[in-house]
Length: 119
Image (cartoon, rainbow, N blue to C red; front, side, top):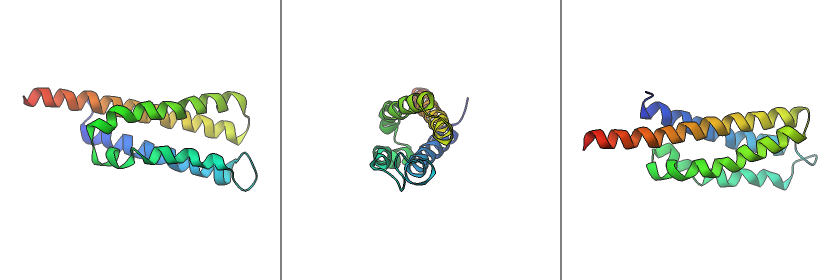
């Protein structure tokens, strides 16, 4: 059973990496338009749960995985439809989304179990 600290660190790291991936992808690595595009704004919603995830707030861990499913879906669509670097970045987005989702769900589960064991 992974510890809550490990799950928190894993969720935090994958969320931060997903933010940086979205920014780098749409600004420098493989933007839709040369020089970047407005699609870079897709990173903004990921900033909403960031502080709650970093602080270990259980409520944020309950709703943030739903948000990340949108990035998983985008990764699936762009991984299927694009080629080259964009396709590799889409696979990275899928992987980071899955890691975050799994770590967050396990954090909620184990934090609930630890609450029950203390009661």
